[in-house]
Length: 339
Ligand code: PMV
Image (cartoon, protein in one colour):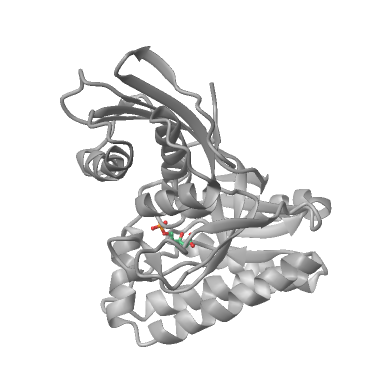
């Protein structure tokens, strides 16, 4: 994907771009950085883009703005988020030579305030919108590298589909970007999100990653495990083997949480319904249904299944005490410019 010139010039010095991007869930998790400033991961990871969890973002760079402003779901964004976005926009100002401050208007069309990570879709959409606004002609790897600087997992929302984000080896991170390896169609993949706690996360992902790196006795083993699991997941996707993909997905989530739980002080993202969701996946598998558990740095249990079993698995998940909503997702596409 190359971003074509698609800017809307409202004046000689006003540059606007708009884009949309989907959130994603990691099948093989990213948890730990080899470089904090550049958001370089300690290991490669694998994800699937989640339709319909979309973020739409417009950005306008103009001389009339005296500071960067961020509007999130029609309200002024919290100051720390605006600060993070402002630092991210500096990358684009440096690349383009356009010095202006910007106004960012971003909204998550998520079915509810579901406590789902929106940084992946948000920074991927902002990357594509800013590149379009400033006429930066960047290919997909370059966009993914930039999105990664906003939030690691955003690198994977640029290509969408089932994506592999390579850890890379270079110190400057130029080889650490995501590419799409499949669209999930062969396996007719479905991801069911069980919403149990719509509130904000107890600990941010960067803080939790750093605490795990510094204090978990399992951190090094976890990193080695993620690297091996990435290879297993790629082979499962290539052969369309949902059972193998589901098994490695569940394993990766459990191994990540094992490392996180063992930090000092321990970080517990799980709530009761999270654990119930894990048991449910195992119970359903015993009954012969494909259902595999995963969970990110938050409490929502997510179950992987296929189209033929989606309704049955969703019904079972919705019956768990504490699950307030089910969001049914399927693999979606990459980040794109919109008019
Ligand atoms: O992109 P971040 O910094 O929000 O980190 C995402 C971390 C996990 O969601 C827990 C795992 C992943 O690979 O998405």
